[in-house]
Image 1: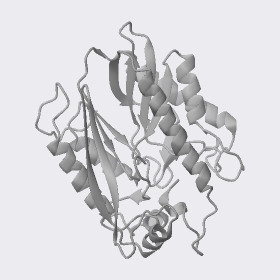
Image 2: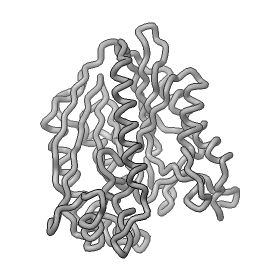
Image 3: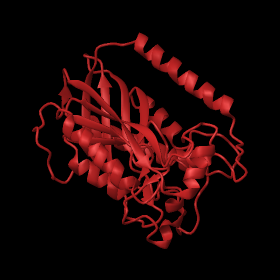
Length: 318
């Protein structure tokens, strides 16, 4: 969950921390099981615009990134093992009022990938902040359709588009893999977020501290480069990062390693009235500036992905 889900105004939390611990334990078990089943693989990587009514920006309809990046892992005999889909969207079709725990549109996404022979589906969100969400608007666009049928429609459509995008990508027989990381500090200017972090039962904040610590990861795989975001970056930051990254295909993994609220530029923070909410649940005015600076330092220090010139490019990302 987002860091600002803890605690309430009295310093308490209604979260089941034991359940969260079990989720983490099961995740570790799944990773260990996967390591025990390692096998040779080749990859396909592609990026393209996902067609159809999948996502939109709730604050400004057209201000979102429609591109979907796909990494497909195959056996040497070209049988798909898994398909990773990287796309910016809040999977919140059903919303929080129906009283159930659901995979939302991601469940049908995985099912469709498997049905179409794409192997195991893996969804990684991208720069989905402020406020890129599922387009489940009704015919007149005056109300959201909080129905499972919309989860099915959007999840299946995104799966079909991802498989279409990657279908003709060239196979990379022996893609080079390199992993890089760095620990960074992000300033906490928001008094609300400082209170929450210092009183969270997850112990994010240090007493009296005015910053938080998080880890960034950068992965080069073949001609692709992948960068983690410890929160929900706004689409404009996502476009900028992809433009400055060094892969032929640049992927952003949002809400990865940490979930420190919205990550926005100093120009957006507490600007438009529409941004009042996301400004309140952002660490502060300089969060985006510090994150981008540190992320691009990591990009610059790491080697470029194979087959890509070592100098960074300002080309518009594919």
